[in-house]
Length: 319
Image: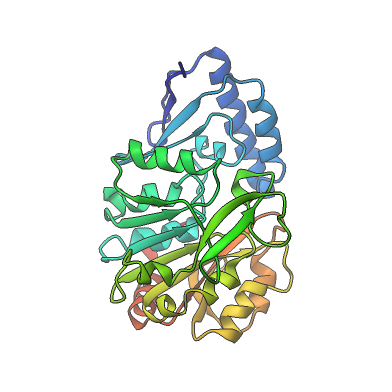
């Protein structure tokens, strides 16, 4: 019988249900994150995953807020940074999600992994929004479904990849946070593929709705946008990963030059969501080649007005 998950409360810092070795490991994971933050956490995942091999196989449930619990395997290199209470995961997304708590929107969480953003956005402090978490991996999906279950099944989960059209593809990779259907994946897991606009065709979402669409689809962002033309014309914002190791800024270039969307990026220097007309700003912002950066694309007057208002609320900005 599997051991009950360790419990960790980010607000209080209380770690419960861990043995002495697991507590010592938590100290190491937190210290590693605090030191690694100075280097964009380069090497942290590898070190944490090595430490994980010495730990019993069990989960940890992190209380993100009073209405959000997120579970992952204890010692996981990607998610263990959450044990560091000063760490903020993708804070430019949290900035927009928090400010949109009063908006009636649906989150389309594409490449959901274990469902971190679906857990948060569907929680009361973020507005209890509808969320559809889409994840193709047979390894990741059970963990995503478990996070839906421990949060009262308040968001929907769909096991598929997102692409340009409905079909099938091969998914492979060595890191759970970086599985991809891009390129030659002949040896990978066969997965179904949906286009974003198929969510309209299948009645999953309404054409007159408002949407925040997180595209973390590991190299298939442009194909996903091609398959979401109708959704992009709605009141929607694409939250799209721009890869730090891409000096050509391919995803942002496509949004700027090939779509009707305005391109917006969070600029740490100004602490604002800036409209981009010259991609050279990304040369300054993308300082780490091994991490992803989120850029926003929208043609919605509603969301553009919200972003303008957000920029004016100095007290609401992430510091």
